[in-house]
Length: 464
Image (cartoon, rainbow, N blue to C red; front, top):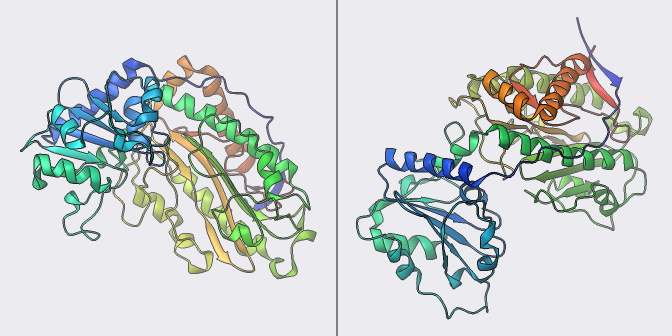
């Protein structure tokens, strides 16, 4: 019978991107057609999609435009050209949009103090798009709600009120409903279906993230500052960040989401936490600053048996439960005994979906009937934070589920990408002893690698 042991591996060399694919205007038109099919099914006359710098992903998915300093909305009528409302600075950035749209300057979206003398009121602008009394409007923000949260969740909308109020005044309150799930439902949302081109781009993004993480791991040393460690990521601005870069040592690591500081320097035996996420990819790790067991504080001398081994066993079950057609409940049940044990300090879902935003939604929760399907991008993101003295462990990497047809398309269009998927899958099976399905395409070159000694990243747990 196999047991969990520490083995030595070589971390693959840094990767250069070779298959980052620009989505074409034709593909954006295909996405618009999918949106209009959903509008027809729901008997909507218009879909109004909101975006800002933080909440950009739905708008970007449909247009290729991501607001920078300002808010923006896309008004999609059931027929005809969509309208993209932008502020002053968005007017200069507008040509990044690949979907044919009519650009409308709406200066209220501009930053405070900037000119506002060249655009009409929002009411007037929306009237010009065709919205009128009785129009059936779907509003898309970044959240939709359940009855346990609000008594009438269809009318609960997270789009700013200065937009929502005007839309309701034009169409009538009862005619304006939340339709964010068109994009973000954990099973049926449009952004849960990646094309071969999407997958190739996300995999290239993951190569960039991995290369930075590899440099950080190999550069950890006593006395290095969080700021210096973050610098090893060598992030050059592409792809754009999906979340803050986080690097924390000691007490800062316990904050979980802290930005790197030049004042906090690494001490042997203390807790480390870091994460690096860009559009379509995210890798994160948490553990102890040690080269081997001699650097473990006495208080955590049994951390391998108490936390790391059980976590790796749980993570193995998680990966091996992933199959197309499986529901989220089955995956949750595979790790339930670890996740629901209060001693392990797991407070969030055991995994979630990813897109250009770091967290799209999650099908993994108690009783979930959401079915996993081909083209779904998933993060193994199970954060164990039991607190002092063990502190915690976190091994986060991404993957995509792909049926045989999608895998064949990837082999044909992107052979290098496909070969890396197969190499990583073989590594997980042969080196780590994790028997994943052929439908699982691992995105990370350190997929599922739990290094109990963070300063010796080549020493990882495996089934031997």
